[in-house]
Amino acid sequence: MGQEQKNLKYFINQAEEHLPNVKEIENLKRIGELQYEIIKAQHNAFQVNATTDVLVAPYFNNNGKFIDITTSPSNSAYGYDAGITNGGLYSVQVNITKNLFNKKLVDGLLLQSKLTNEGILLSSSAMVHTLIKNITDTYILAYQQQLKIEFTKEILAALTQRLDVVEILVKNGILSNSDYLLLKLDIDSKGIEQKQNRIAFNTTIIQLFSLCGISAKKTESLLPPILDYKEAPKTFFYLKKYRNDSLQLKSDEQVLLNQYKPSLSLYGNTGVNAVELSHIDHRIGASVGLHLAIPIYDGKRRKYMLDQNKLKRENLEGYRKNDAVKLNNDLMALDNQVIALQNQITLLNKQLDQYAHIQEIYKEKFVQGQVSIVDYLNVIQSYKSNMYTKLQAQTNLWLLKSQFNYTNW
Image (tube, rainbow, N blue to C red; front, side):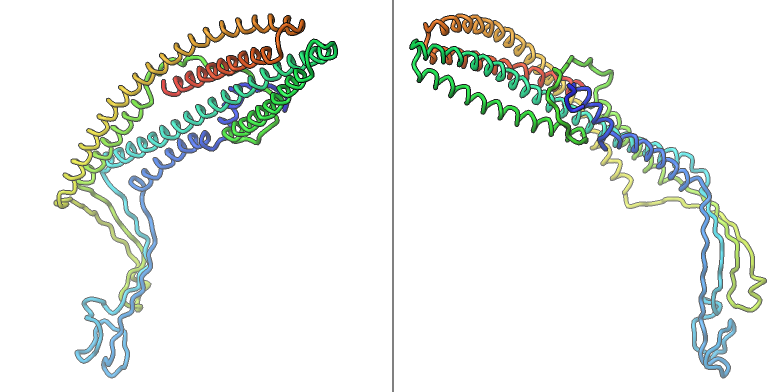
């Protein structure tokens, strides 16, 4: 498994399977569903609770008694007014309440909850979208380092073959010993460079696995990244967010207005309710009633909140227009950069073909001792510089396509 070549899709699939950011989306959907049930239970279901109250209000110096619990104290007794306390309270009750005619209120709260949850889902989707982009970019950088390793390996193999030839030419007196040492030094230098390339590749691979939320595995090589332009979505993300934010404002406004409508609730209770312990077994009963609340004045709170929402809508509209312009400009700029890089790569390929031809000529002359080792190494260095320029251009092209797909969303 460690030696298997992996492609970009493998890492994206691993991220979707293991990262909590991705799993969070499904959990958020379920949380939203549960919130709907909470709202229904709070506003539609019967609310039942049990209460117990025990209150004792004794009298002092009542009819010769130092302390007495009664509902008929003498004029000389000390204690609370019997009309307030009735001497005490002994109550054990089950209470029931139910809101009536509140369908519009509940519908408004359900819509508000739904839109809030959709807003959270949009934010989570944006996080996942950014994460996939980061994985793609890291994969591209790792593959660039892999290409450097492969290219340096080819150069090292060619120089090592030339070293054997130089050794023979030195023995035959065609080249000096310093030529041999100079080539050997260049091979050693590229060997060190190769180790650095390998360290950079392994480090980037570990970062790639970390982004996917899985333990790093030994990876020798990657497959080339395949990045095609994604088609423009039917609705861009910024429009989805604008629509959700606008609907949230409208929903919040409706919930606010519903709070200013009359509310009617039914309440009732049953149990024991007595002011003295004597004959408490006969104080079992029940009661039922209606509660009507009509808002009258709130200190202009409703007006101020409606004014706030109006300003928020203006802000949203401004951001929507700006995002539309920015999106079009960004996509146009990225497209132009891609075309420019493609043209640059075409020119670089032509230059590399020419350098490859020059290398072959120098190889033949080098074997015959017609060119110096310095001239030969200069040709190799020029070829390497142009190849690295092409690798960087190709990497930039992949990164631009990744950015285009990220933006065109």
